[in-house]
Image (cartoon, rainbow, N blue to C red):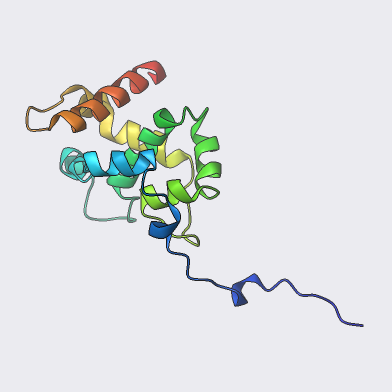
Length: 144
């Protein structure tokens, strides 16, 4: 008698998240208005050159943004939901099979970056970036 084996890795379909997230999705507007790469420069002093490679600060900031954006109740919940939502995966630059970081990545980043990073709002930041920092500053204040 035959038995079905669930060898899922044999059925790896190339899923193009770019095509799966609709063109009018709100996260597309956010991604178009805000280049989150700026955070690397803002937090570069918090990272060394030795040791384990960290999660990209741009991804961490986007995850913090998603907590606000969709009013996710906790960092643990966010990490569970990321793997289930194609729009989140697309926004964060992850693929379907990419490993989602542990929820502790966000709290460790907040501790490493310090509230000063969110409080300074450098004049070099365009308005959209300042808006993100303002949102995150309010959120950080509730946690400290």
